[in-house]
Image (tube, rainbow, N blue to C red):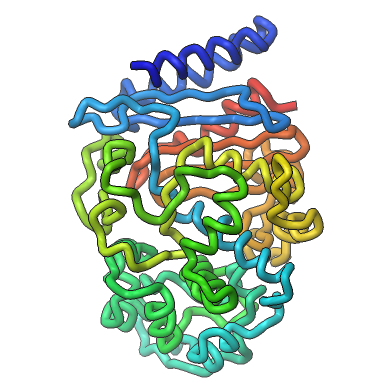
Length: 412
């Protein structure tokens, strides 16, 4: 009750700070979230918006666990899936700044199996036999950061059976899930190196295990496990107390339950296991997946993003240099990711043309997670936006509507 009252007090305090007309626009966000909950399209959500580093909107709505009767609160913990990639990318680039890693380093320097990789190529029309050919060149750190290494999640028909036999692709939930593995991430990535990829390095934008490979490289370059690396270089300096790969068992009630969208858009509780609740409390706690393994809160994640918006430093803690942040948030792939005004930097999708991604200003960047969470950073409007939900698969459009709702109320 105290947590809920505290959130209400914060909402009231934020409302008082706005002119009346703007308060009415902010209330549109509240009404939209409540509608999604009332219509049983999401169980609950936490939304947090910072402007100039200060919270201007924070709302917890609905249920953290409907069946247990637990309300959503501002400090609820979420599985953030691919939002992990930003943390791992920052860790890798911090090692680059120390001279321990170079963007043009070959991945094979750290994981020998990546010295010579292969690509699966179809012979003619779909359904024909697949040939395995050598990669034209070695995969680099830059390729991995920009998702241009040709590495997918192994669920395509041309490679799915091969990946499944190695415990990857279809054998790993939706491909990206490793929390149930009893082996370190480097063991999984060494096995990945023996499998064919789906495009030649540098020739296509392919979303997949790239950042998991980077997590292993970061471990070997730093000499410490990825969980320790992220804690010591990012989480601890920024005061992120709830960002971790696995949750202490005594805090299991803080973890939001996962729900699934049905064909009618209504939700039901997701099953146990890789395609649902996962193994983030009672699992083996062995695989620190740099691509999709972290848990966090809206407040932790917003603080992490504010550090990036602020040029790599926050409250005296310097994580990256301003020039490295600029490199991360500038399109590095031309039109490989999109020919319609979106790019991809060293860990983030970038907005290069106004209108390419809703109301994003030019220079905005962000991404999301498989459980339906999403974030955007818009330097032009001085905004950081974070929306946390737990919906897998996600048939809701709430993650698309959220930034527009924020911009109509707060964007400048």
